[in-house]
Amino acid sequence: MQKVKGMTTSIIRKVLMALSGFFLMLFLLQHLTINMFSVISKDLFNQASHFMGTNFFVQFFLQPILIFGVFFHLIMGGVLEYQNRKSRPIIYTHNNPSTNSNWMSRNMIITGIMIMLFLALHLYDFWWPEIKYKYIDVGPESADRYFEELEHKFHDSWRVIIYCISFLFLSLHLLHGFQSSFQSIGFARKKHAYIIKTASNVYAILVPLAYIFIAIYHYIT
Image (cartoon, rainbow, N blue to C red; front, top):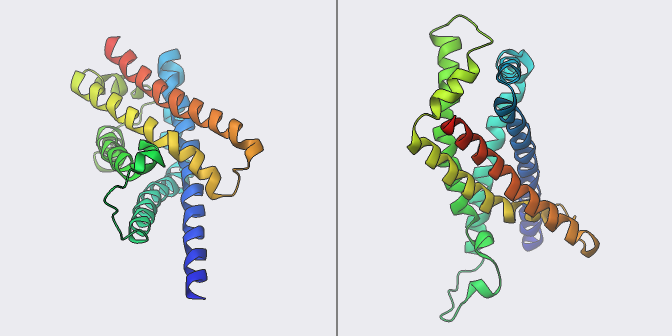
């Protein structure tokens, strides 16, 4: 009975991990859309950023949910990784994990930690200055300041390099995480396998690549 209960708890945790992953992937697309506006039109980017930065629902409802989702995903990933290692206490002398799994699946916790370190830098670059400007310094609200603030951050080559490397880690994380999320919710039948794998590869490559393009674009221009 205890074993069955433990398996049920593990399944629930995997499902919650998958759902938080889907939520964060949707956020990545939404965030990418707004950032891509900065390449298309300065005014369009300023308008979208101003709306996101001043809308009450976004600031005081969606933003706390997002912060919770990020930390929940990280903590749950650590818990699942610990459980997986604990369930395999015996280290075999001739163990060759590469024959049974790829590098991404074996190092999800590493790529996840690298992404979180990048997120800390990203919050330092953009979120904290925004909070300080609006609630501490109480600067005059301007709908035209966002584009200049974005370009200012990408003047430094070292920051652009860190951003690009971080998005490569994100790509590696997504290459396994996207498919794994569908498996966790039981949507991994053979007839869907090709579609899920293709969608996973497209998302995991194009989305991080688009973020890299934006960073390099603003550095060059």
